[in-house]
Image 1: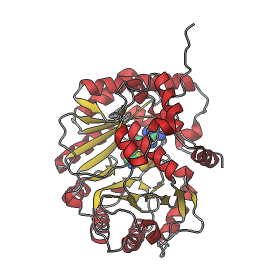
Image 2: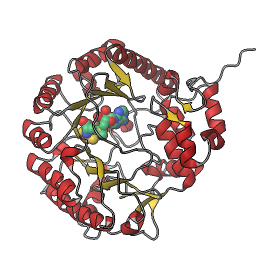
Image 3: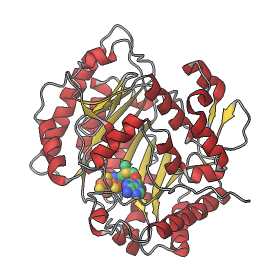
Image 4: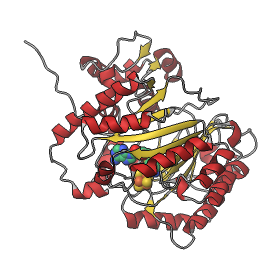
Length: 446
Ligand SMILES: C[S@@+](CC[C@H](N)C(=O)[O-])C[C@H]1O[C@@H](n2cnc3c(N)ncnc32)[C@H](O)[C@@H]1O
Ligand code: SF4
């Protein structure tokens, strides 16, 4: 008798960080930041500055951001970020040198800020935090209309090594269907300005699974992106999430299965086309041009090293606690959180987050390593956690193998098979702890 194994839904949860912010809760009593960082290594920190402003709210987006910034709000936001940076830098102390291995400005849309404000943002990273932006990788997100020559020139001059442009689709009708109002001509012009600015790495984000998108129109977007020979390309399956513009207007049960199948087809087409055009696959979403310049010195390990986030949408990671501010998607709540942030004078304590115990740290490491194409060394894992990954997660790993999702990569190396990689968003949630799963579910059903 032939047993067929029922496959789970492929698009459940994009696990780019574990635990997800929806599993954070108020920390009581709020720990002092100085205490959280005492005893932490400061040798290879990551610095993340979050700008929660956008010109529009795209229909698919559930990031922490608001539309527009009335009455000098961006200036007040940067003032608050400066106060927060001063507090955090003081909390790190001077007993051990603090070294940032990389930095990123994300959002929202960091380039919503004007050129002079972007300069201030770089000053916060350099003068207050002590990051040497010109000698470490610095990544900045931008949207086409805000990627203007004056902003790009400030960013290039201050050491930006990677500019990530959210394109989503080169087809105007698809951009409209995703409620991302933009025209291809404007996108192409923005790409030209980015190349003119001479920033070494260009990344283009594209989305598949948009209403009205076909194999042929997807190919047009892929080819339009390839024409720029970007050093990196991200292919995102469309997710329609609660409280977003699309989420509010779309019936959640409509043709879910066939939409899954369609996205899987687009994924295969996109991956095959990029692989055939000189790119290698880094993870389910990320592709890098084979002959792209090396990424430069960056010894930060995202699975384990610390991160300092500034701004009210940013998270910070120490070994034992992940923390941030409150999180929301609905406009009124997002605005209230930003207003509270800009009025804050005391940043000495972490009010919101999640304690990461040994089990969660192990899950995080496993997840963030397994979901990369290259997989990970079982020997390194054993050295770090004192046991084999199969000792803690044998049932989960066996079940991946049964479904053909593990590559036959030997006992000392664990890696997903090409099909496993396609199902990354189903695999990730299988490694969530029961406590994180419950906290995320409780957040969704508030
Ligand atoms: C940090 S976001 C936005 C960057 C920038 N603000 C912009 O929109 O141009 C990075 C990327 O995530 C992708 N993304 C965000 N929400 C998504 C969703 N619901 N479904 C699919 N992709 C999504 C988009 O491709 C987006 O460019
Ligand atoms: S996708 Fe980008 S521009 Fe659109 S709302 Fe989200 S963060 Fe803003």
